Picture 1: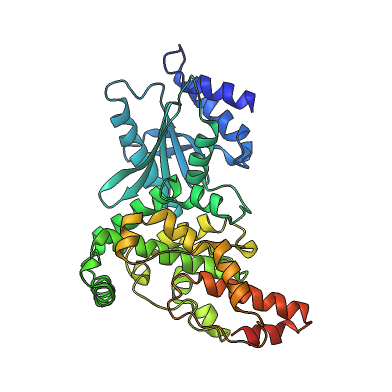
Picture 2 (picture 1 turned 120 degrees about the vertical axis):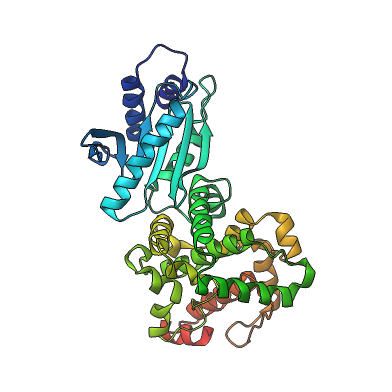
Length: 379
């Protein structure tokens, strides 16, 4: 780790005499030495043909991320020129590869990530690295959210909040993309209808307390899309391999007789608009990095609390019981899980039901019930 800190101190020192090529080399070294699970074969220099027939070089490309490196972004005009260059790179790669790309501009101290929207390249998230006290963990987490390279991440609250929560680069990128999609297509008949139905339902339930804003609708769209993708992963289905429309419709569940898990709703408008399926595929790829089959907590509660501000949650009347307390209450209340029925009519994200189901399955396992009988009994 000392070598990594020394490297970061050098990268962040914009006052040192150094060339742009030196910064590029150090950035490549960082990508290889930090825990991004990358090899030399994953880092490429790509040459693109411009409309004028000129050769344009992408400094570094890995996966669906292109990185433009500059010596010092503080200099007049450097950042603006870099954004112009990066726009051309991202547009060219997305047109060629038919996938969503993320652009990064850095001089080692400033790290800026961008997303292509209908209005052009839009900055989504930034990170500043200090040469005197480089935050190696912070930069690694920020970059990993952009690169999306880590695999088999344990789905514990800390990791979910760190990598998917409101302060993460991943959340910034997804929110930027989704806001742009909604802004461009809010007058689409299907989008407008679903937005109106969502507002009508919550206004009926909450009255004047309900903050009827486009921003909240977009936040709820991201949360529900995320939850629906996770639902597939929990059951062993690879979301990255499923078509977006299937992920948001829940047809895979219906085919196997499971109803009410994932169904068409207010938030599947994404797959009805241009570039919406690309957004869902990218979100699915990002979420597939977690080992969702090892879930031990109410992950939807963690996601919701890490994305929706506390003030908004209060207005919506949403309060969450800690897992440890819900587990204790279920243990005290459900004394004979194989013989009792459990009802939670206002279950929210399902914290109590989650622990009630776990208690039932543990009792079924201890009693030696066959798996099929246990699954039938739990429903």
